[in-house]
Length: 112
Length: 286
Image 1 (cartoon, each protein chain N blue to C red):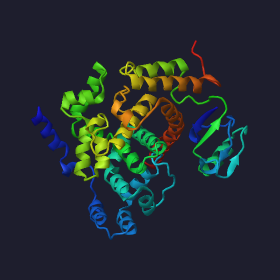
Image 2 (image 1 turned 60 degrees about the horizontal axis):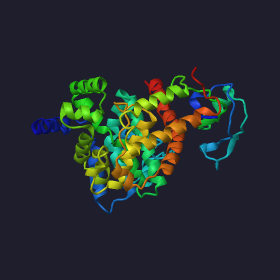
Image 3 (image 1 turned 120 degrees about the horizontal axis):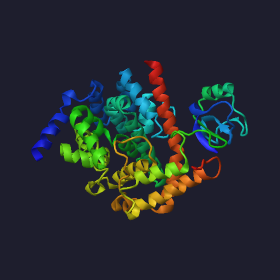
Image 4 (image 1 turned 180 degrees about the vertical axis):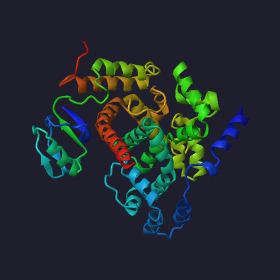
């Protein structure tokens, strides 16, 4: 499952969560999960001011098709000045965990 | 060295060439000093400048505040407070320039605004809107340096690339000051309250913040979080150190930080969306 901006959604993707009005679970439900998205439906969601949706798998690669290994490598690069710092390295560990979790289970690509 | 810095301060803070200060602001200032003036009155003054109103509403509707669809200036004043609207009015032209010249910095600023808002709410701090605003504005010094010292700016960028230093390190070496200090000067020259100018001026070193250490700590940590996430582009790609003083002031722990990262990453999708939408509007609008 991946949360994506509506602007990047395309026909053929499948909703992984119900869509609600105002992006809030207390809003009016508009569209149920497991619905196959069509161009028509996307236009209607846009008119209803839906900003983002959850879709199945991991179809959008905003960072330009990056594998987990790639993402971890750029994380290392960003943290390279502070890896030895006791506090900031905690944040590093949190991000490593986060990336593994969000990329690992469904649809995460493995670099060969 | 001090001479060079003072001279630079003069150039940078030459109000005649600063890209802002519409006449409306003076009226707004005198109104906000008067206890008897109402929000409606102040909103009317701002609304009389349509371009300015549009810019303010654009920022007020950014994900940094978490309210969507703020559609009128008087709504914005009630939801965000007069102080915040005044600061947005003052800084709106700087944001306009930032949007046009550096999408990366604009996204970084929005991201830090969102992160600060999230931290402040989760910590149950008062004046969340002020904190978001300070976070949104924390890097305005960079825009000013870029505008007023474009030659030095090129040199700064080269130094960052060649020697892999933080932007503030390169700035101090080349112009003898840094964007945080410049941002602080600007905030002072606009008469922004301390609760906004302190976080802007000391977001790299919370120790210097005396009166608003909590707010400054939030902006500092929010900046670190966004750089850790790799969202936007603030000039250098290196995560700064989380200062112990900020960690202790906010009584952070790992569990809390992990929750924040999870929620923040979710929200950053919306921020990206917001920024993409603005860019596509700009393309179709021009």
